[in-house]
Amino acid sequence: MEEYEIERWYNYYHEKFRIPKEYLRRDYEGELSGINPMDAPLEIPDKIEVFFKYSLGQQSRFFRELRESKRIFGSKCIRCGKVYCPPRANCHLCYEPTEWVPLEGTGTIKACTVQYYTTSAFIRKLPFICAYVQLDGTDSLMMTNMEVEDVSRVRVGTKVKAVFREERTGSITDFYFRPV
Amino acid sequence: MRKVAIVGMGTTKFKARWINKTYYELAYDAAKLAMEDAGIGRKEIDCAVYGIYNDFFQRQYQPDAFVHDYIGLGLKPMVRVNAGGATGGAALRIGYSEVASGLYDICLVLGVEKCNDCYNYEMGITTPEVLRAILYTADMTYDNPAGRTAASGFALAVIAHMEKYGNPTEEQMAKVSVKNHFNATKNPVAQSPQIITVEDVLKSRKIVEPFKFYDNCLYTEGSSAVILASERVARQITDKPVWISGLGASVDYVMPGNRPNIYTFESSRIAARKAYDMAGVKNPIKELDLAELHDAFTGTEIMAYEDCFFCEEGDGGHLIDEGTVMPDGELPVNLSGGLIGCGHAVGATGIMQTYEIALHLRGEAGERQQKNARRGLVQSIGGTLCTWTVCLVLEREDR
Image (cartoon, rainbow over all chains, first blue to last red):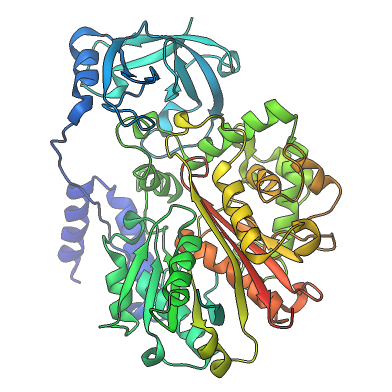
């Protein structure tokens, strides 16, 4: 490529994916530095992106209560009485519908670990707690992460309470757990 | 049901980066090796089963169609299987069914994965972006937003096991890492052959409590293939068939909150029991000569000793302390190096494990050959806290 074409190539990917130009330059110059550059493996930046307007289906009430009224609901099987949170519209054991029941938002850690490494989407939060919480009044476990100052203070048996965020989006992250 | 034999097999090297091949080019290499080993060509293959885990890794949805096209099997039936880490084992199960049912005589089962095209430009490394792609296979509504990883899920189970039974200890887990990295030094296709000490493992950086760096498998690119055939065809093709004498599978609740406990993997226990019953194995520690267990993490290898009934529930840690699972022990585990030493090319892994056992049963495992290996176990697990398990018992001819 001509010098201005190379610059255009850098600009294209820099603007498209915010990749620093020095990275692109390093890769480009590296590619061409071998003995037989035209046959060298060629690596191209890319990203897969799809927009959604996804339906929460029969769990909509749960998320609407989080966003609108800062309340957590479970769902109770009308036959066996098992209470689910995360909620579901029907019981997988009885094959009967469930009904909504308000929960206190308090619970107990049933399993927990400390993450020191994670995905690029969460890496700035490290270290954080990854735990299963059983909300009081329910018979199931909810996966959660907890950012706490001292990770050693959170253990199996620790009592926790849900705290709602100021900015709520209608997702499970509208609240987080804090040790009581 | 008809008897099913492995009549050909091949694997590419397992390594971090196959920069000079695409996923379907890697698949071609494994397919070619397997066909050459079986002494047949693409025309003799009746159907195919592809084990490919993550569409993001391949940067391609329905990657199976492009593998099928590229390796010249057009117009033959095929199906793609995806079962998380157990994808390879699950593909073997479907391939077995294709042949055992009588529908087809020769089935290619091929696994391929190429994860390290995922790349994080900001950090200049692949792994966090690979983990991000994996997180799309966690429940998107409740689990994905928690930022957990496969490692943190399995860590929760190992911690629960430690709390209930007092093991595996961090030292026991480190011994598994030392063993598997060492075993890999004898395996020419392994990604991570290393001679390390328990101290090295314990001092390596923390990933997720209680796993340190060396307690984890690495992400791997590679492809492995086996060719399955009916008894009649197997007798014509080869004089060293390896029989699949036992097969078991189970899929647990993917939301572990719906399980009675998380300190044991019920799907693994059911799959192992079913495979043993089918193969007539009563006392696995005595009747198996070697095993390839899914050691994505050292702690889960130790849990697998129990789940595969090598010992009582809660006693797994002792098998590594007593040397039972060492190369010279009563039941060597992961002579290939396992996922930790050989690598975890997700869709290919279960097939690589099967390749390894079959190699020993054929007496072709070279430096690491287990003497008089007659019967071996493959365990392939995957998904959130071991959702999927597939177990296979493989046997050599003259049993």
